[in-house]
Image (cartoon, rainbow, N blue to C red; front, side):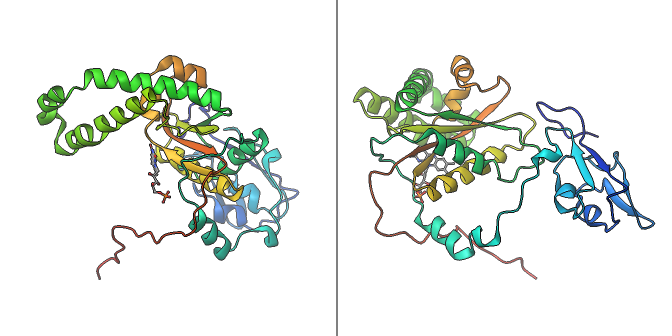
Length: 304
Ligand SMILES: Cc1cc2nc3c(=O)[nH]c(=O)nc-3n(C[C@H](O)[C@H](O)[C@H](O)COP(=O)(O)O)c2cc1C
């Protein structure tokens, strides 16, 4: 069994250097797929167990003797990085402060986002967890206001097409086939939203990307867990916040981008991939004076 991926058809390959291995068993204890196991006090590789090696690299990362190498599925020992110094890692207070400080930003100054800063955000976002390694998520970087405007214009065209087809009378006819929740979403949220995007555009207002100077678009392959792209975007959001940039996730653009094949091509989104979420990024033009208490709808304990 191999976990499918848009680029890799093979399992990872684990090798143990018997001369370097101290048989401590750390790699076997951490292997999530039981490909590595201690048999009679000796580390053994069982390539066919479970999913096979998914190339998460955990065995290489815990080995104190650099005796383990994992290759395949886009990973190699060259990917190992030194651990950040403990004094450089954020504690709970710093992380909570970053999370509380972050708010969605929809007004940006004229200042562009530095290309290197954008690259750093993407690099930081790539540390996010994914359903099963390696990433099968891609990220498009749109680096200038002019490019953002071009994409916004195309998306607005898509919404104009949507409004021409999904007239209120058609939605009413389709209601029994769509079900109540979907009808309510289309008739009372998506259609009015499309109208406001189009109307705003006519008046020279960008209600889609809010005239942001940069946008990231996260897309995923059909083999990826769909939430992977959302998790990556969440990490990008926090990364941007840590670099004093403002962001907002934009769910309004991806479904239209997905239906515009030539735009997908221009953006480098593979045919089979689904754009999940966009993130507008820029230097905030407004400053929040307070943060706000947010609550989940419910937090419950399992009943005994
Ligand atoms: C999945 C997702 C999609 C979103 N899509 C949009 C969008 O299309 N346009 C927009 O203005 N805000 C969008 N938002 C931002 C939310 O509206 C925002 O989180 C909300 O205003 C709460 O603000 P806060 O992030 O400051 O707490 C989206 C947020 C998420 C998580």
